[in-house]
Image (tube, rainbow, N blue to C red; front, side, top):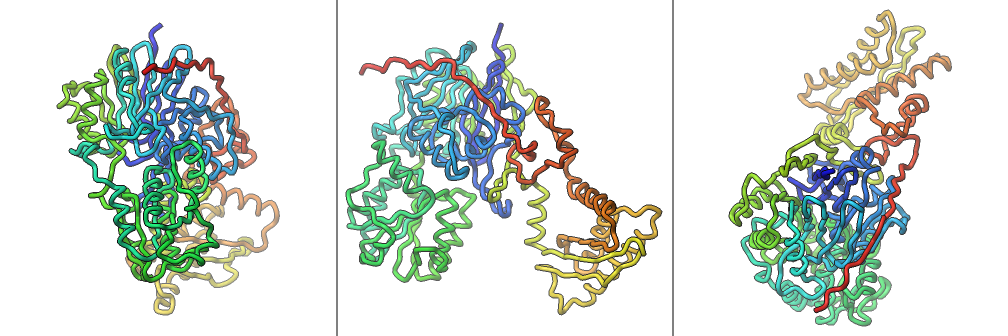
Length: 628
């Protein structure tokens, strides 16, 4: 029987980050990467964004494993939230797995080591009708791998983040022999990195960042504070080397930096000069000219820490006159505004800022020429540009056409697209879940468009709160309505508006008392609508309106009915709860009220049950090591 093959876009196309793709062969799905992205300024209060967890609720029992290409957040950042509720095997290189475990432990406080499997470029995993193998790639992180899904129709190759760099060190070197071997088997489809497709440089023509950092350190006589991503091992190594060359001791502060440095040292990927690391208590005993503070974390986090240092809110460090703050990572577009704001705050505190600008940026991603070389090497029948914003996908397509590919065999997709191979041609079929899951603090998926809209309104027009107590039995208002605002109008100068709002409240309640049947839901809705109309008419603004109605002289039965009515009104936006049929929990949700806003299974959590998906690895075999 011919294999049925689908390729799913679960995240990472037409956007920057959140990489996750699926390859389905018959009934088994192989998930490639599980990353996060950082929100832009329109997502108020959101910490990070991950792929749609509803995919795992719908298809989780078919997922054979999650296969990781490298240890950056755009490839592993969603794992903590997936593994909270799904026991899915995770495969990656030794360093990638260690970084993934650190990420999971940081978010979840615990980590099931049995789910993690270390592989390398010589590993083959046999799933009977599909074989998964790997090949070394060059990236800004060592131990990075590409993934080859071998089917009876041909190879499906996912590059992950990669580049061609002839000058790369041994641990970062692309395995061209393996690429040639894969090409000989026949590549059905290539999912290739588009991040740097608009660059016309060759990667061996990139600027010497190590020399640049050393010169910055040499030319400053005071204390240096460096902000960088902890997982960028190359950059961390360059910082250590420059610190040693300028006789500076290094104090580490930030998210998981100690564990990451220790792990990289143990594996031989990071060489830390002897006696260079110091404790925080040692800072006051060392001259400023001999101190370097390395602040790390996710791209947004070190910037927040720098702001705290500059405003005397950091627990250990305060930026002072003469400090040099060096931002050692080229910021993504989503945090450029934050970088500018942080720099302004630092200058006000007496520090100065230097930034690794775009002219000094060494990319870990393939240039246009690299992408054409990869196409020439693998000779794929079909190309699916991934990992990048829309313009980058289109540029990648044009480069492929220049390299000789048929434009009809190149697919520009969007998140949620599912390509089905039928009669040796890919066609769009039913979409897969691919909405953004927004993480706000510890909440997973409980912030949707309605919440974001309310936050935007709050930031623009503030909030209007109206509280009133009624006696439904006597059909009267017990006391004058209490009205208050925040960020809307100045009450002392707006008595007419506040008095008018009180009149609207009293009129609305009186009208509802005259109805044949009193309805709490209708009363709250009428108050909200009438107040909103009145406030817009008087001020031309639309604050968030929050009516609060309390009742006296209510018996226990009526109180219960009212609470049930209010709960129903608060959840009007929930159109349906679609549960996995074998969970059989819809009735429990209705009867026991188990809906939770802090759900980790998409937007709903069913009776706090943890959904476990256990897969046996049928056979793992190793290819013989190549003999040079």
